[in-house]
Image (cartoon, helix red, strand yellow):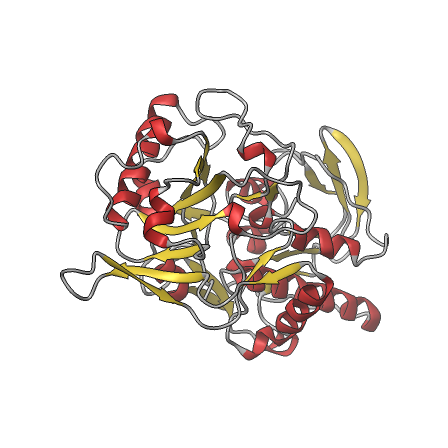
Length: 407
């Protein structure tokens, strides 16, 4: 649950590259996509800022202390191998994993929402339009069985599955924006299609005593934005995050996660559901070597012989490199960041429509929900955000960080 805000919880033992159960990693909370959260610095995210305050008060989020999140950059002097520059501002992580965020959203509905978990809506025939233009009706199937008929549906994800899901429906304008390119970057003009990058996420466990990571980063640093190694973008220690209610963990072991650069992931692309063993071994070796270079470690300091347990994943449809921005009057009146086709009763929300961040996804969904409620109450019907009134714009934050707007 939660897409990029998803976590592996204790007991959810993943298989490692050799097909064995990851016993150490499976005993702790591990965020394997989004690692941290901050509020984008624009007025349109004020509601999200208030929500973050509320989540912190509820214990859903925990705030990093000063010095725990740093930029890892090249040293300014020859004798400085690298530098850690502590970041300012409020940065958070999920108390119990980033999965705490979608769990809190569901909990706040007070059972007014029916949640279907472990459901597969097939991209080829999962939805079917049964109504007429102006009188929408949709049939939705889960795992091949009917979920029922609905007068509204919302596409809240992206990538190939969202494209295929809507490709055989009459909502052609909305579908045209779901077509996706996969690339490590996008032109400064923004491109013609939604563009998503890919990122490798490698989680590994090592002994705390004698750890070269401890020796070079110190015991207090939890997260680093890596700026001095082109193959890497982020490093975090999962076990240094304090999670209320987490089972007592073995303090002699630390679990770390590396996020690769999009360019690296593109160069070593593989089927994300079934990464070939040879590819996985090569990627792991290269990521560990890149981390050694970033921290100026002696080559071989982080060989796989020192790894107690590990899990490699390819985040195939990771971060939007551009966002669709509508220039229509209706979009301006009702808040940007979503699509709605009133003729066919289908909408779309997501960070690719506003800002490549958790705050962008949350705000997009909120704006769409408010719009649909208002339209029903006023018995009006408007299209919002559909082409040709708009265009894709490159996200400078996503292009710079590679992992989204997280600063």
